[in-house]
Length: 519
Image 1 (tube, rainbow, N blue to C red):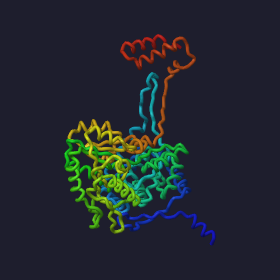
Image 2: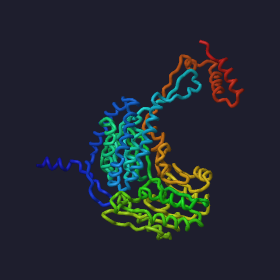
Image 3: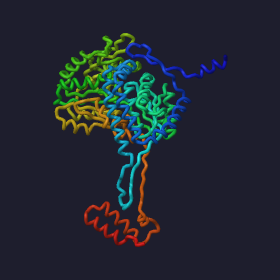
Image 4: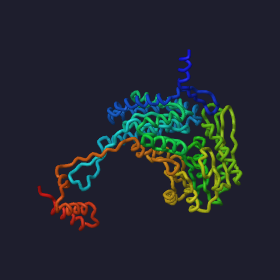
């Protein structure tokens, strides 16, 4: 009996999943202990050998099949993501497109790199120089609750295309989505052990960091620091995609109707739970009132929750209940410091869920929390600024540097301003959606992270770079022992390859001919 009690104490607990819109339990998964994580990664490491040996063509065939699986099961994906994460089904269904594009991007890239990349041998004339990209082994992923499906699939693709096995810890809020992701890869034909999930809280994530060869973390700057500190113990390379407080700059010439609609979309998409969503808006004084009125008119038409039960709504519930405290703190701080509430601002509790309405504020100042910290919700705080220069200065006055947007009829002026914004991504006349343009790198500066998790740059995160140089016998002419002609020979090669003028390069050729050893 005593042994049975001890075994029950030691047994991992279950992680329960709930629908954030009504609090109903959806299911449960087993929490992975540190020992479980170690076993899982060891299994992945063994499976990775076969996955790498399959070669680029073999891996690409399977990853290409995943595109078909995503398309065929899109509606099923939408239903599960909607129920466990709270977003309208149309959003995850729509995101299957960028996932398919991600697969094509990285399968093409892996094919291009299959035989290495030829580079110049410089002055080692007659030599061959190539760069090869080899898998690191097992890539780990600790991913967030706001886009559990899209990021859960997208971020693993470059690692798999490069020949790595992967182990992911989904957010504790979305374990069933994590299990579905693993099932989708199995459906595509990925061998056992190549794609695996572990579930749990911070302890599970820490154990994963200890075991893998490279780690991708998406989450808050506070947790990102802890991840980097933990990874430093084993010198495990990390890529961190962290928070943001993205600025939107509205120029004097902006189309107000278009801009208002774009700002609402950039703020309220995924109920504002988007790392690169619009978080602060800078507007010329004369445009504040007309723009605000248009924004309020638009948000009043948005449907929050799904009373019809048919998935026809625009904003879902607060997915992660602890966010409510931040919403209320930032709203109270703004109002206490003089902001005017024009719409929303108070949580709605219905059917067991928490719903925060689109919240529009004017009279914002830069000392308010909402202008300095990440709110991560459907907030449109509007601050009056005197011209482009002040807007750029304030946009850059942030510890974050993830994204920004500029709204103008003058595209050239908008693009010129974009170059002056300290951010990883800047959009002109749009917001948020650069995250769906999978050919663009995605990431930021400052507390917004380290590295890039999208585009070709993402591929390099999961590979070891190997240089291979093959030399002819004539290379011995550059070896020791040196003689009286060595200096002239070295200087001659320098002038040939780096000379400032044609005459200088010709002079270098003469030096090399005269001093070339005759053995």
